Image (cartoon, rainbow, N blue to C red; front, side, top):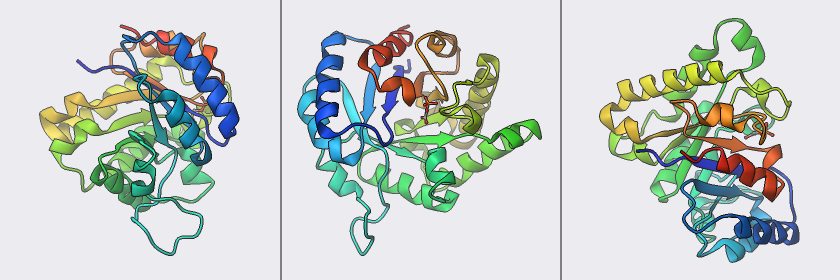
Length: 251
Ligand code: PGA
């Protein structure tokens, strides 16, 4: 039985003080036995504040990015051992903003994913097609290429630690989510692909939907048979809105 996982990707939002206020509000909403795994992804600079406010609550936190090397001459970058020191459980890998704005390649994404696994951090691997690719009937082909490249060196006994987020690029930050039937179809495709590649171990992999998830549409995605959670951007910036989405994941 896969435990649903709902994650807040704050992107470049919130100072440490704002993060602290959010976490105090959010943890007050979440009952101790809440049956959904919750993860918050603050900017690096707010990781310390988030950790202080969430440690011991059962709510987890992670990093939006990391460099695959442990250390070196990489001005401006942060490594997994440095982030581990801040108690992260998860790392977002392959987000479309990293791919498209910062030019990250499939190969670099694979190195990051490997570094996360080696550091004992669970990657949330984002995959998803652009609008033109969907219109051209190439959505599956694109997602399959992203999966194959990122997971190339992964062993079957490691795959259960990975979460896949299906995020169609055209749905991110636009207010226009995918149709639930299209999200389900792609999630089922991803699940079959994982089973072909990794066998029975793939059954543990959780698949999230992401892209304009809001409290009023979350239920339509979170009840789908192959969707085990959501990766939420804009609607995660307010604790009440994020918790409303998380509640829709309760089975
Ligand atoms: P959004 O972002 O919810 O604001 O569309 C989702 C994401 O980028 O993970």
